[in-house]
Amino acid sequence: MRARLILASIRSFYSWSSLHSPDDHAADNDTHKMEEQVARLVDKVWDKVQDVPASKRYMVAVSGIPGSGKTTLAAKVADALNERYRSETAARTANSLLATFLPMDGYHLTRAQLSALPNPANAHARRGAAFTFDAPAFLALVKKLREPICPETGTIYAPSFDHAVKDPVPDDIPIRKESRVLVMEGNYLSLGEGEWKEAAELMDELWFVEVDEKVARKRLIKRHVEAGIASNDEEAGRRADENDLVNGKEIIEKRLPVHEVIVSEEDERWKPEAQGV
Image 1 (cartoon, rainbow, N blue to C red):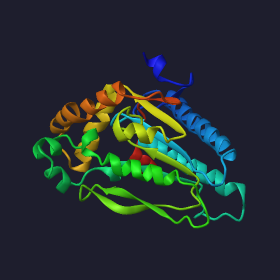
Image 2 (image 1 turned 180 degrees about the horizontal axis):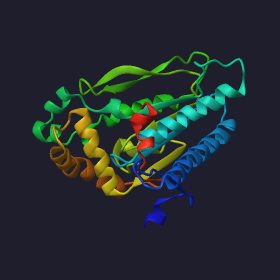
Image 3 (image 1 turned 60 degrees about the vertical axis):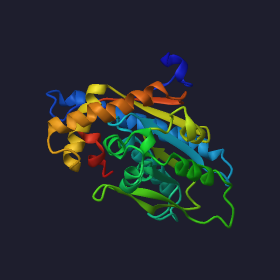
């Protein structure tokens, strides 16, 4: 079944190894694997973009279950593309961008919108499920980004998510005309139904970050406690089991064919916080 879901035969290894491992050499090797795979993906996108007309953007969607490490991967690829872009020409400044990193978090329904749904208690408890996102608005953004770039093209804005207030922030992420590459990340960017499927079909590449469920659960527990979503590990574990990992099963079962599968393991050095994400 899985072989039929993957367009490419390449399986990348996006590896982490615990900082507390007694074998530091092995951990270093795992980190090098991570860096090598980021470099390979950056090379791939860089080469593809050279053949894309100046009027078009190259769009990559990185998906995976909650806790898979997709945010870190997407941010690292976008950063590396920008570093290479700036290094190609001395005249380019630190503000010169080829790629924009675009998380899907800004398309969460607001808490007020969740409260207006037919079953508000369930909607709040299941926040993070596909139905708690504004999929039509995300599709509208993707369609807008697919429009040809012309002299009149202005900056397009996407929403971000403020974890302190637990709601989206409208028009907070600028996507400038010069941004030729979009590296998007989100749970449902390769989901094969509804507006998610329509948006996925407009992408140039779909990548999926695969992770062992136990590793994802461990990350989610830590994340929920640190974010104040849960008061302790037990409560965080229940949320992971009853919501995040339930969503994860849907993400896997309804996944479209993808161009890259990146296997994520454990390495504290590559968690989003360590990367400034």
